[in-house]
Image 1: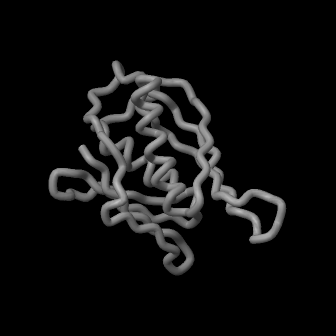
Image 2: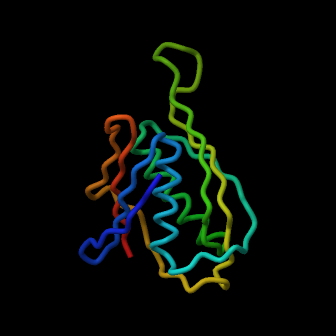
Image 3: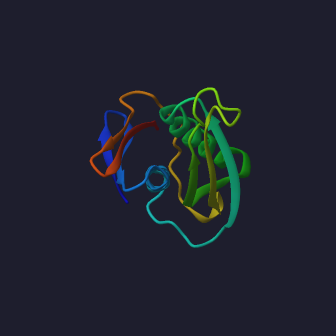
Length: 143
């Protein structure tokens, strides 16, 4: 799994690839962390979160939005992301009708980092595709 920060007008973008969808979510979230600060200290405690949405793209957006929310509420920079993704069950089944990501992150106290504020994730130019044997994402963040 890899990510790269890309300049984007007054914003910042994360371009990521990974072999699985869960690893792609982790990689984009790691890119969000990297866009927020120069160096990531080893401090902080892990916390859990679950996000559901009606599509893969909405799930990625809502997951990243939730990380920004957790930063603002907990006063931590989420880092060291781990994700497990559940796809919706087949139409007509009695199971889950939404995509779900169960995730953990290490919450680094904001006092431990010189963090740049990422205001929001955007749908602008957002891409989430299966490419060959892997996955690709491009996400723009408002700074």
